[in-house]
Amino acid sequence: MKHVASALVLLSASATAAGALGLDRSGQDISAIFEPGGFAKLSYGFTRQDLSGYDISGDPMTDAADDFSEADLAVKTDLGGSFSLGLIIDEPYGSDIAYGGDPQTTFLGGTRFGIDSRAITAIGRYRFNDSLSVHGGLQRVTLDGVVAFSGRGFGPLQGYRVDLEDGEGTAWLAGIAYERPENRLRIALTYNSGTEIDAATTEIFADGEFRSRTKFTLPEAWNLDVQTGIGPNTLVFGSIRSAAYSQTQLMPAGLEIGLADLNLADITSITDMDDGRAYELGVSRQFTETFEGLVALTFEPRAGDDFVSALTPVNGLAGLTIGGTYTLNSVELSGTIRYTVFGDARPTVVGLPVGALTSNEALSVGLSVAYRF
Image (cartoon, rainbow, N blue to C red; front, side, top):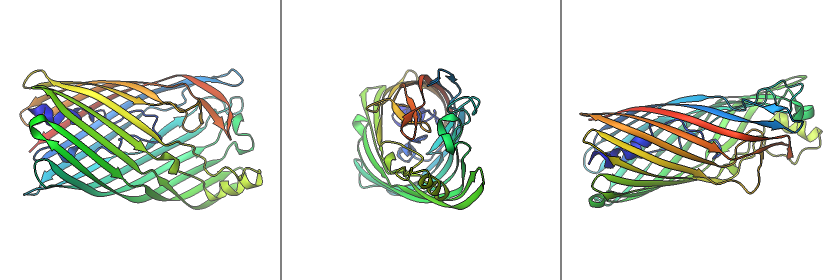
């Protein structure tokens, strides 16, 4: 049945999704490599975010995150025998934190944490038989970003800005999959190595600029993806992603010197992200020969308390995705809508709370077109 192959394709139509798991955007999805025959998919997603609340003086914190979009491409082909090759272009990491408000009167007004990335992943898969296969490949990541400290909450650091440009790094991935075609069962486990990024850095201080290079590591991660049929036209699927974002320690050289002068040398990173997990569970059903529907739930656990970095001001989430695919010969048109509610969070600066975000949600819309050849 067509829905056996397309369930995860439909889900990945929501290419851009808001998430609380570190800097995750695409979740390093490689589902295209499991599609039968030749396959190509182009996806576009748009997310509107709303993070708002009040700072500790009672002034509103509004527009703490910008909207964002993403376009992704995946192509897969069989090379004969048991070997398949795929190419994936996506945005695995990103951030669009941008607090509104006057920096002279609010605690975080003007603070920004923006990350844009693009990755090219070459992946191969070898099938030993109908049940067992292995896959692996290389990923090249490019990254640009900006961090700006603004508002009364940053005290003597207010006005500091760092631009990260032309950051690059290479990672690798490897995994194994077990399948039972008669039951439409597939269990795939994939390991993604950490990526060491080396970026040109320009730091802006009140008394001038400081140029250097900054190295930091994007996290290693494990993805477990499972699907199985529960009827002639119904498929249940789920996933667990675990990412070690505590590995991502970002400290530009000029700021490190400045913090030491302020007796804050114990601060080792301007980002403060915890390791975490993201869970998804869904069901796909083919209603007719040409239409398939999907519904999925997403969950990321909250941390032990509400205190989070002002640069990553979310704490857990729950999301609902609905979507559908219309098939016309070899072409599949898919669309999804995802509504996400984020947990309450209390942004901190140097460990001290500066406010609370209590009305946090996002709406993501995804579209994709896939072609089988």
